[in-house]
Structures are given as structure tokens and as C-alpha cells.
Length: 398
Ligand code: GDP
Ligand code: MN
Image 1 (cartoon, rainbow, N blue to C red):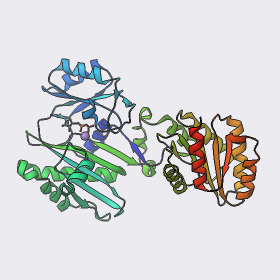
Image 2: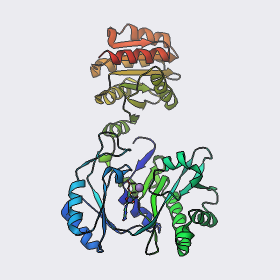
Image 3: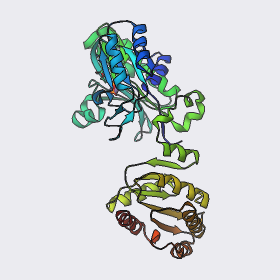
Image 4: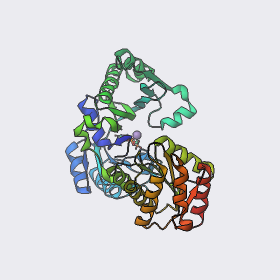
């Protein structure tokens, strides 16, 4: 699995938050228009919301959230949204295919607020962020009106304390909208924190958290991601994975125990060590290129792993050249070089590969690359800069 964070859908996130006592609108997830209409009828009321379920935000602006005032409208919108390629600022230009929609009871929204819980890398602790500017992207609020973002740092030994939740509720001016809602909002924040901690989340973002005309505070939207390193403690969460939403190559790489993240450039990268991989990507950028991926092959850069990495990187049709940057510490460069040459021949790559070896037996490794008989298709480079420049040149030549 790609290391980092497992994403889930909004409807799944709301189920989990509901179990922790966070109020959420009633709703049902469906996969076709007939079910959508039936779900709306079952929910009752006179306003419904049809919401595209994809692992990306910004759905409202992209046309993936529709408010409906009769059942026919629910059916029509569900029909239109299901199967669409929803493009939002978080999906990339090709968008994401919508396979499920959430049908929810409509809310009479009086106020939209923002709330999130995440790990602050600077303080190395959990922080709760809140803002009166709900419905807007928090990045935009941070850039334009940073004073409108409230924060409560959480002491890991104490957890989020009740006074902190109350201070946030007052900071959000909940009392001005409806004084009766101060305590329920503070309770919601407290329960959200319990969910964050209990499920080992890496992020819980409620945008918007709404105060309604009928005097309730609810999570109208929910984005929840989990810390992959803690998933072993939550077997039930594994079932919430939606492989349709994940990059196929990333899943394949994870199965092969390679850390691979697909990017949009044309220079494939194969590096041992996450830091070196980041450095290599930076260097590609510095000389005017664009990396096609992050790939940490790990300590054992043997022939088998290099071969698997070649296959995965080259499946991305954008890749026009592969840069290999290996530091031979425990693993010897000559052994790596032999593996690279053999893997290159086995896979039958049609794109050039630039190899930069440094460390134990680097000279012997470079000799092996130089004498591989592969000519311009397998190039060696001395420095990382030279490797990046050769890769950019080679990628431009085909
Ligand atoms: P996102 O665009 O992916 O973040 O999706 P959201 O779930 O946040 O929905 C986008 C916007 O749709 C919200 O900010 C609300 O303004 C609006 N919206 C969603 N549900 C309702 C609802 O039940 N009633 C009303 N009036 N608006 C809603
Ligand atoms: Mn939202």
C-alpha cells in the first residue's frame, strides 16, 4: 500500500463519525437512479442533496453536489452525476469517475463553519483548526485572512480538553448565531477528537460544519484519512478501501513492497531511500525536467526489484526516460549494476535509462554500465546533476 494515508468516502466517514456521537445528516449511498429516488422517498422531507462520492474535495463547484426539491429531480441528478467524470481542483484534469452517490436529507443551513483535526509537523502534536469561513477552502482563508483561523494545540497526554472545545465554539461565534448551540458544538468537537484518536486518523476535516435553522450543529461534509502505519490496529477499516479510487500502479507497487507515487512528469525515477528519492526529484526539477513518479526501491536494489520497478515505471505512458540513482552503502554498486543490466535486458525497455551509482564499488559499477553493450539506451552518469541533465535530454529526444 502506498505509504501515508488511506482515504475513504464521505459516506463512510460520516458512518464512523456517527458512531462517535458526531451528528450527521441522515442519508443513504446508492449506485443507480432508481435506488436514489427510493432512498429519497425513504428519508422523507421535501429537500434532498445528491452528492458524488469520490476521493476528492471541491465536488460542489465541479457539479457533484446537487440540491433537489422533488423526487424526480433527485432521480435526474443521480442519473446525471453517476458515471460522470467529475473534475475538481483535487482530481487533476482527467477527473474521477463517479460510481456512487450519497442521498441525504437537505439541511436548512444558517451558518457554515470550518473544522479540522490534523497532525502539526512543527509541534509534532495534534492541532484542531476552526474558522467561521466554512464552505471555503481553508488554504484560501489561510492566505487571505489568516486571523480567521483559530487553533487549539492538543497536549498528547491530556487529549483535547473540554475548555478547548468550548473556546473554539465561542471563537466560531456560535453563541451569536444561537446560544443554545454552544454546548452541542463543543460536544461535537470533542467527539470528533475522540474519533480522530480512536481510529488513528491523519486528518478529519469538516467543511462545512453547519448550524441549522432548527437549532442543530452537524457535520455536513466529512473528509477522513487514516495513518497507514496504524491500520494494522484497525482491521475493520481495511474493508473501507476503494481500490477504484486508487492509482492502479500504486496498488501494484505496494503489492511488490515498493513505495511508489505517480506524478505527472515524463522522467521515471528509481532510487534507494526516500530522502535520496526526494533529492533526485528536486534535481530533475532544478535542471528543467519533471519527475513522473516517486519510487523508493528500498535497501535491496537487487535484479528482481529493479525489474519490477522497471515494469511499473514504464507502464506509465508519459515516461520517456528512467533515472536510476542508487547509493551503495551496504548494497554494492557493482552488484546493483549487474542487476540493472540484466533487468534492462529482461524487461526489454524501449526507453533510455540513465544510471548514477555512488558509494561502495561505484567505479566497478560504472564500468559494468558502460560496457553493457546497450549503447545510448543505458547511460551512466557521475554526478546526480549530470544524471538529471542526461535524463532530461534523453526524454526530449524521443
Ligand atoms: P465539497 O464541495 O466536495 O466540499 O462538498 P460539500 O459536501 O462540502 O458540499 C458543497 C456545498 O454544498 C456545501 O458547502 C453547502 O453549501 C452545499 N450543501 C451541501 N449539502 C447541503 C444541504 O443539505 N443543504 C444546503 N442548503 N446546502 C448544502
Ligand atoms: Mn466540503
